[in-house]
Length: 142
Length: 142
Image (cartoon, rainbow over all chains, first blue to last red; front, side, top):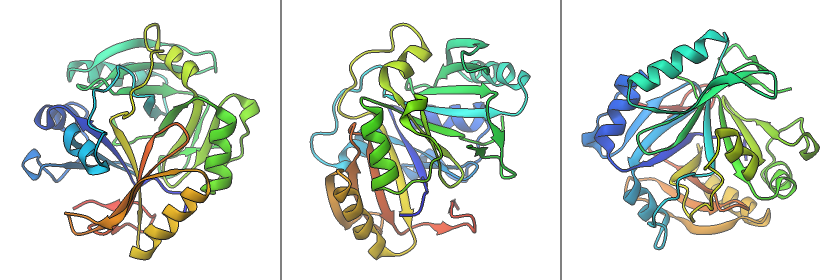
């Protein structure tokens, strides 16, 4: 198995709503539209997919389409190279309809970060510090 | 906001157990160990992080450390270039302690895929078909 995560798929309650949040609000590039039944965004090195929650659960199999708890247990992080970008991106997300669940603040690990939730309550962290970047924009883990 | 997902963090019940599953079972590269309190894996274009569930919930803020439902609503996909790799990787995952929740089968979208869950029940799809690959191993979304 090569070390690769190809796609992160979010099961969403309203594909149209989530499509607009990610495409028009966060400006993620896509060539798809909700009419396709699934939306893919080409992000740096990984594909973000939006798919109706029920369809995603059904694709795994019987017994998976059950109510989701408030916290999925998973966070997605968008790391930035300049501290000031954290505030800018949280403001962009809020303007797009995100809920700021933790305003940007200094962190115990020496960085600066905040959290927002998307229209389904999935948790994103916007963070600066601690990491170096590879040339392709990915993090350099040492 | 640049189109970038930097990190996917899984909140885990037992950091040591998950560390061995991902490092020794799935062979993901890492320079960290559970003693650091968090583990990062350098995968293709994105960093996979393992962090204790309670710590992750507490980092977001009060009220997030609640029981997780069976389905997080999120799936991670590992896409492969050859159909036969799907079976190989599912076998590798099972040998590492994963639970195969959907054996590999032809899909309605013309591919071939199966699902497994990791030690915390997070859902991974191993899939072949439908996508072209970029030179860096990421998917080419058209």
